[in-house]
Length: 507
Image (cartoon, rainbow, N blue to C red; front, side, top):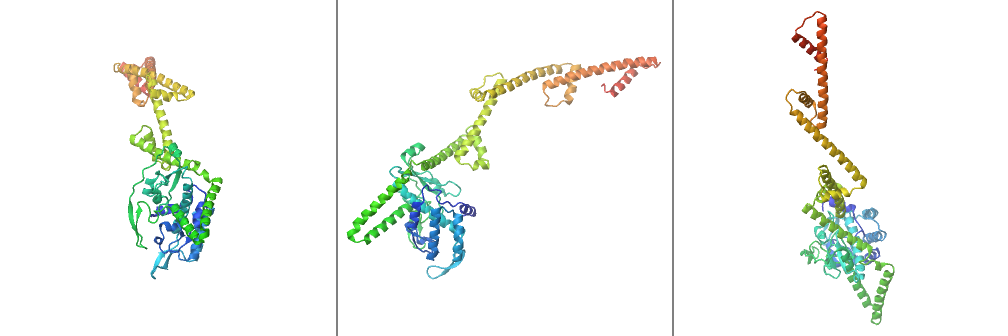
């Protein structure tokens, strides 16, 4: 296991979060366990875990009993992992069961072994809690099998989920299917999977059908302690290929049978009937207390199952949209998935957000088409018309006003552009063409035709004014020079007027 996964699992060690049930059945399972010391976990696997509590390399039965009691208290009171660990660690350290220690191994040899550590306590806590709840859940499942005869495998679906467990997510099989005897969760160390019990009505409401039994094959595992070889389903850890609830029931049945055999033969039959009557009465009491409400039709199970179905349906819709490059929706999905917030959404949330964005984009595109058609005096398409009609009345009026103003401006620009074209066609040196060339020498390239035409009119007026002033100056000079007795040639007079005009900015 890599470091990142260890840290994530250490921070998230659920107890009953995957199992919707009161803790009493789980407590019954846990309290029924005896104590057994083991050096290796392989010494006690499968059904034996339903009958005894053990922690590998914890050979002190008093300490083993202390840990069992602490877990029982945590189960009864809902104590989270961190609080349970913080309370237990000082006891383990005081007893010397912490860190790496030199220990006596089977056969009289000594070896260095890892005893207590946060990682080991995490595994101990999760394994015992999940197994206890899974066992108690199985009792409820059996009690309600007639009303809700199906189970749906429920994997967590995140980066820590085993690939095989993820592939089983959503598998629906009858409770009686033998697959549940080997794949009823938990299916390994730190497995967080669970099941959802459903009725036929539930399946119909959620559009689910009974699945084909998954085919994953098996692998051979040889117990290094006992040397015994056995077949284990692919995706299941060695020792976890049993149904803990079924194993518990078998253990209880065996204990009950042994107990009955210890009675005198004369009362053995009466005792058996008494046990059966007590079990029946217990079920009636549980039903009267509300236990019967946990059927496949119960709101919690139905909502949870419906949510799983909705997430899978949303993921299928997302995949289809991306593969088909659905207009507007596919780009919205890609944009959303590129953001941290989008990647953090579950499929249903992601699809809903993308659809909202796609609707906005399609609306904007439709309005753009409507504006284009309106300005061109063409009939808008049905999609464009629908986008416009979807706007509130005041928004429609505002958009029409804006488009009318734009259409008017467009007509003005066309007229001004035509006038400018006529000016450009005039002979070189004509006042209008000269004025336009002067304006274009300094005007911005983005200037509108109406702005250019207005500047040309101003330039023409300025040019006329300058010419009139120059002529007046020339007349005044001629008269002044004549009165002073100065005789200048017409050519010299013109040059003097030009110098004076340039100095006054008249040219």
